[in-house]
Amino acid sequence: MSATPPKRLSLNAFSMNCVSHIQQGLWVRPEARQLEYKHLDPWLELARILEKGCFDALFLADVVGLYDSYKGGADVSIREGMQVPVNDPMLLIPAMATVTEHLGFAFTASILQTHPFTFARQLSTLDHLTNGRVGWNIVTGYLPNAAASLGLENLPNHDARYDQADEYLEVLYKLLEGSWEEDAVLADVQQRIYADPAKVHKIHHVGPHYRVEGPHLCEPSPQRVPLLFQAGSSERGREFAARHAECAFILTTRRALAAGRGPVPDVRQRAARYGRNPDDIRFYQAISPVVGGTETEARALAAEYTEQLSTEAALAHLSGSIGVDLGAIDPDRPLETFDSQAMTGAVKGLLESAPPGTRTFRDLARANMAGQFLVGTPEQIADTLIEFGEAGIDGFNLVYSVTPGTFVDFIDGVVPILQERGHVPRHYEDGPLRQRLFGSPRLPERHPAAAYRHRQPSTA
Ligand SMILES: Cc1cc2nc3c(=O)[nH]c(=O)nc-3n(C[C@H](O)[C@H](O)[C@H](O)COP(=O)(O)O)c2cc1C
Image (cartoon, rainbow, N blue to C red):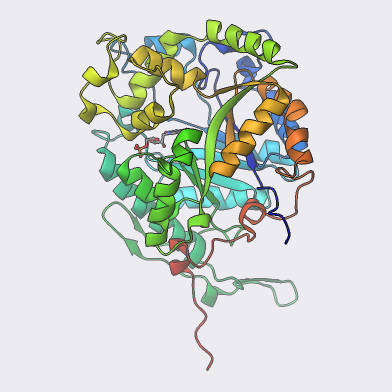
């Protein structure tokens, strides 16, 4: 009998085109390059570093508004560089793609910010330019300021945003999968025929939110639909993930995984109800490695980070995420005294994965930053990641304390051990991002997008 091969673990770096992403306040450290976020150089350097470490992708978060619900406004967010100013993540990708060959680029874009017809064109263009290395993190947006700046009277309510997202995806699937047939492009120089008009179709979509005639303006790209990421923890969010997502970004614990609780088994079961295989979705846990030559060294570094983290900025972040002004209530008030109706799935997810002893909003805000610290020697960190893998996690989104330092330490120390033990490949396989993760460049026939593919008329 042959032994089971080691589980392949997927690695993504988690970043954002701004000064301060998750671990607020650490941008002031001298080795951090966050201050240079508006220049290309640190991004090109990061892309090269990640490719050296055989990472699957750089995952870029984004928001299109201010976190302005703390202490009645956005002053703390602006003063602390807390996700503002924030530049567009998508525009970094072609530059980073020119200095890499294999690294994937998953970027976040809210369904509220761009009409799906325009967005489909952006996705196809990026997928062409990168030879199929693009992923999209589907978000529905939670900041009222974003809605107000995008011309909406109000931020649509939580479940209505997911309903709109379902239609947004339907339009994208029609455009990306159903508009251009596979052999529509002939590029026939002799006959001067670029494409066959009979094989390019309008989509005639009419729905509650969108009317799109089509056709899609781009010819089919290597993946057609980019690799689909999603991070939703509410009931409705999990349902959405089960239907559409290929990679789900979650917060869980090894204890929950071992007990068969939390989003992983739940979303896999829901996926089966949509005719998908439970393995059609990969689950990525957020971790923030703090690597030291010895455990004592690693602990000292983590203690230094912890000391420097800005609780004030973290409270502004959490206030915006849950839509509650934590400056107007006592942040040291026990969480259970708070009306749980007002707690969104995001907070529930945070609570579920927060370290024991998280009792107040101040604790929760700090857990949001330091709760994912994984502190130790390279061997200790590799062991923990492998245990996560054995418990059902497929990969990790690495949250940085300082960039690129957190990624460099991980790649120099931990990746060689994971490679040695067979969990991370030493070399990239060829092909688009989806092919490397799922074995095929296109979405499988089981995915709802496939329903919109143009079928060849039967010749029988
Ligand atoms: C690890 C993680 C990363 C996220 N990144 C973003 C992001 O970059 N932009 C965004 O608008 N929302 C982001 N979200 C929020 C989710 O898209 C979603 O709104 C949130 O998890 C709440 O999900 P729910 O509404 O289904 O409960 C993130 C959530 C998690 C857990």
